[in-house]
Image 1 (cartoon, rainbow, N blue to C red):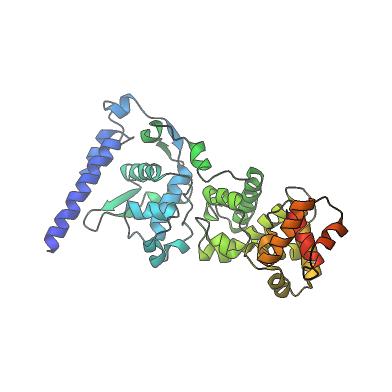
Image 2 (image 1 turned 135 degrees about the vertical axis):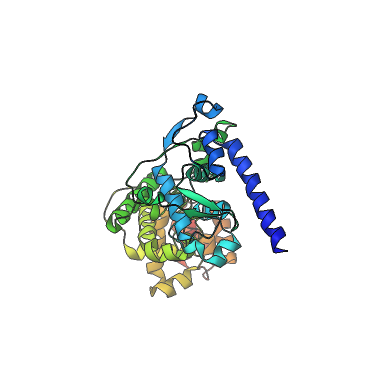
Length: 357
């Protein structure tokens, strides 16, 4: 019964402790003594880690992210769940617990599960976190975590050796999101910093770099699309969504050119277009005439934006117009195209298809 479960938990913890010792990037003697509840004032100087020390890096911000996440999940979960929240995992458990709405959800998406495991284990070894063996090995903050969380001290940690094996480096992992617009990424970082400064918070609390990379790749233009980005929950959508959607839409329509502020009407029309509405529905939703909506869509196409005319008008009409364009080419005289098509096809439909063809 309960005694067997308790014994199982202890055995699992022992196994995890053995793995932690084997993968340790801090003094192994310190790790071993820590397992038995003892501390070592300084590294032993004799173990393989001490004689062949790994490279170190400033892990202050990463440590703050991890400690903040442990605090946000109310110190009631183990390493794996904390890492899932940090990396913005899209799991049923996270959604059912509401942890996708936490401020720390997705702020660590720029690091692999192995990297976060190494960081959290080192925080345990250094005494900033402890595992409650009797309670499913949940992570808890220790009193020494407070000054680190408040930014009163700097923490250097060892780079995990696991990253030195194989070909995975930081760049391919970033590129694993696919090609993204670096100029837009920089603009989104500036926006993030401005929002963070206004709130007196570090930028990663707004959104992590991995989330901005995905935004710069996918260029979401609707709330629904933004929610599909890893690291964007309902809470952050409500708080920051409009600012980021405006910035992305303005950048896209301006096609990277500097100029005045984007006409909100143009941005709104494009957002509706990206949601899959047809021409009549967009005009109706915007309270515009068809001519006004078409004029805006033609501007968007002219700016090089991905407007798909085949989604805007009836399929049969599109097929007829496409056939004529194949016969005469887009550079053909307007009247030639007009005469080759039946009257039921409107002028604006021909213009839209020709512009986007």
